[in-house]
Length: 481
Image 1: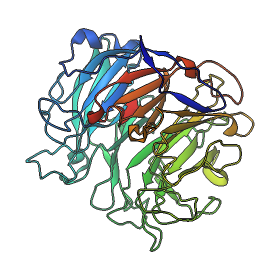
Image 2: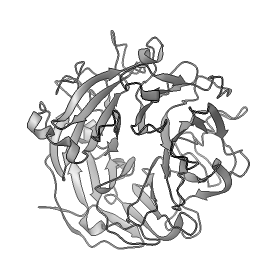
Image 3: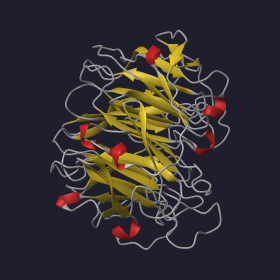
């Protein structure tokens, strides 16, 4: 056991310093088949370090798999049957997502390497073509299952950043998950690829959605970043998921970087868009708000329909907004109905919301990361909100009597006086509990939970444990289970 006094609980509960198990720093290795055995028995926790050095190649990237709190394997391009070779700047692990893509009951894994170049790499600083690696869950463990790139969407490779965002959901109601791939660098302002629709294999031809898709039909510019964030949820309760697509760079009129979120139903070929100027949405569209930079869906009021949390990390709540890299930050929450999501009765959460503890600062960037899931086991979802500028995570409990509440909320902080840790840059709610990435420190904190009904988060903060990797590799940049 190693002493570790870094975790701070700043609201609702207090944490006495304790002892946490510190896992050893990762070391790149080929993945032994024994380490990946029995993947069907339960999911792995995947922790990405997209700037890890591999075989001397800086920023090539790795993904470390944990099972039962112990390291099971370290994945990189060129290991464990994964295609390609590690190259400078590939950013393998820029995004990770798990889902059952073939309907066999085993958890599969998708890993984005958004800066991979298919041909000769261009100089540092240029956006990559991007590729997504697939690993199929079997009784033997995870098995490399090929790659996807933009050519599966009928496009030629360009600086697309294919795989910069990933999620999985059953969009067509056939019992297996589809893979949703963000392609924010696509020339017409970004795009999203859907793989596995209509019974097609996930490795087959995909369906491309852009703002110019006829049934979406939105104005767009090249800097919209449509697809920089993706989420999916059954917002109308019909048993099939719809898409939420963030475009944090989208303009509203002549105002730059306001951001927008498109709700798309590929089955019905219907779509709508939300900005902070939409009727019922609190606030106002302002420059560099970046609405849609993060998204998370969950049933916060246990009514059988998913709800949507939308991050607005650039939201300015003080007298002055310092620029596009600053923001107090906020989160909009839209609730699901029989007709889908509605802004009527939507919520606006920030550090200035009544009942929320702590001081709101223009460097907080609240809403940069979001995760939803049932932490306390009472049937409704909780919401975790990252504030990487403050080095904190705000956790709100869901209730059956109105959804999210400030009652008994918890603010979890990283190590004191270490803003460079970027604690809260990534969050996930998994079978292990709440997972928080601090990529600046190469550290991931896992906080287990307990069953506790009502307006409680269920977090067992005193039992938190740390997973560690190389700080320079941005270990914890993305997490998934």
